[in-house]
Image 1 (cartoon, rainbow, N blue to C red):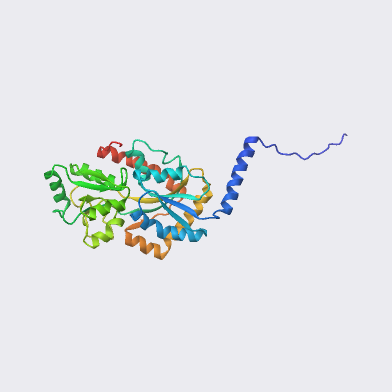
Image 2: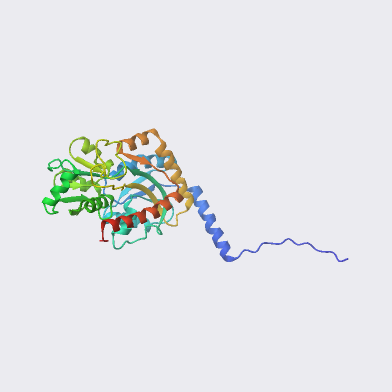
Length: 331
């Protein structure tokens, strides 16, 4: 019988498969050595606002856990879109992070044009925290002490009251639109580059009304420099238990709350997003951060990148529904 000669068989790799494996391998190697230098976190609003109060205690611990400092870079303007665009166009190497609010999704509904896609151009990292609602505040000189009295005053002044916001599409704007739609009134919208400058003008008596987060307004309410009339959301804020919800104030349910979250530019290795999210989980569990959040009136979330991605899509749909309900046209 003829003898059979055995040969070793080499697997054949197609060029496309080799390219995919090369990219995957490069991503894994990059994740192993990352981070090797400071990480820049872009906050697309003016400094001194509520977002700083939430971000800093968390990111200080995230930086410590990653072994590299976190550098805050405030880039305010255009309802948060200027800073967000910087992140969308940044290198996909894990050294640029966006830390922003729910305006990330609402801007897609309330602004006619965005220089980026809020879903396609970003890699979700985690939803860090959510607020207990936006609080309707007025300057103490205003002759109103309830939602009912404010509505009556707005009608008497023929819709000429002013309210301040951190920009079109920001939670401070949406909460105001929902209030006006429910109350059947109009007010003049004064926009700012962030919650800090907006609130400063309310505190100074230059603008009468604002709908800031509980986080931002709390110390001024406690000091008597602002008068709180109602909070949005399904329940009262634990740090403002004496302030009624809109429903309790007779206006109807306004279940709208703000939130804070983090993104990488799209294309950043998912391993890096998972690693940052893991450090956020540790950070929000720390007693100091938990105490800070309790004082700010926010609750931690620290969702996975996958869960957060699903939340963003749901929030975008919810904002579309709010815009339709309140009759808000993109600007």
